[in-house]
Image (cartoon, rainbow, N blue to C red; front, side, top):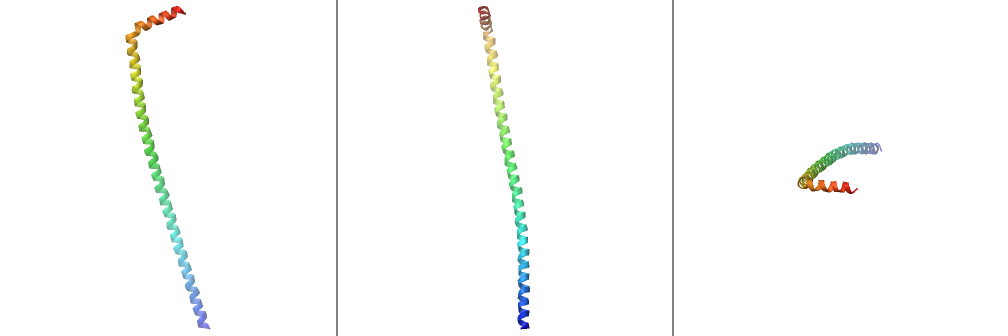
Length: 103
């Protein structure tokens, strides 16, 4: 009988050790998974920030190109108006003078 009790005690001790080992393994795996999640989150955030910066740079470059084009078009329009005025200022002045007299 004592031998059976000793065997049961050994089985219980072994079972407790197995459970403790399983708990330690579970804690280690949980800790490892948490670290992997933190690493993934950090990498994802870094990747997101990189893409956001690339988009900002692209939009900034596009804006600069459009502003340059707009400046060029504005400059051309002003030059065309200036050239038109230089060529037609006498006629424009006469037309304006006649309009003033009609009022």
